[in-house]
Length: 441
Image (tube, rainbow, N blue to C red):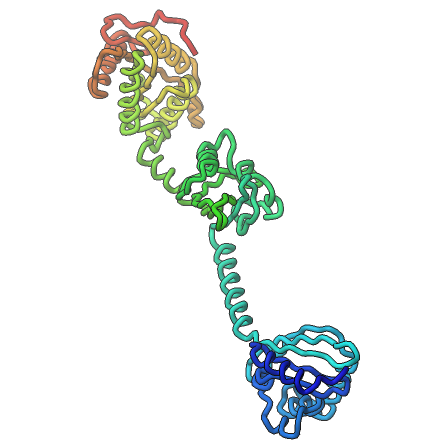
């Protein structure tokens, strides 16, 4: 390597003294040709090493070895090893932590004709920041992986681009879903809430705690609370969505259980009077708008006191549950059956006129009459029971409270009881309608 002239060396020194990194240039004899103050400061070399001119690599290596920069060992041997490695100089980048805790990134590049240039950069703060960032990411990952939560991002087409934590909630490995449509895993015809989330994403609206019902990889039902925001690049171009889903299955099931207790009869599982009242009012409003009739049937099990007195209340409860199941099985999904109290049941028949209401009640009466209830007793393994039915119909022009409607149906039940029980009687009719043999399903 040609030795730089004094003028060139001064110019080079001026330039490198302004650089924030430490710089050294060695010649082929491993002597420092030029270095800046940052090099001497970063390596903590004393001025005494530079009193007699630029030092050789071995002088610097021996000084470092003696103060423990290279670890334990004979300083002379360690210094010789540094010099030997330098003779076969290859381009290199490595990190070295000094005993003081300072972390240096050292880059070396051989020069044509021999010698090399080394650059020393203090990366202590950067490494600490990286470590802090890694620690925060680890903490976030642990929080996600140990909580009922997964995070996700999609591209502008709605395909997953990032997922974390989904496996312990839905059972899918992240690799199984990346690149696939979010809608295809969380939204189908049976999951309207999930589709609502996708519609909001298509409209690029914020989503806040939208409850989604979906299924796990193995088919189990899970409820998720979805919150998400659209993301844009600095120029305002839409990139996709970033969101979080929280597993609220336990909370949802607990709420459903509470609703079941609040709105259903604990013995039969049928609607209770409160739920029936709400549905009756809803159907009355709908009936008024549509101009359609509404019928209500009151069902009173015949001689039920005798069942309780003879076989006990446990058998009585078995009979009531059997009646409840039979009534539900014979009706439309739009109809509603409730336990009114004791051995009485209410049946709400929307869009049903008086004649149709009587036909439905007769169908229920016949089904109950021919049914056999297994009560499980050795002395009496089965029972047959019947019921009396009272039907009232509310015309579109009428406004009637539930209490008044039940009272009308109750009068009809009394008429059926007086007529011999196991009969159907319509409100306003003095004769039981037992002749109605055929009726709609």
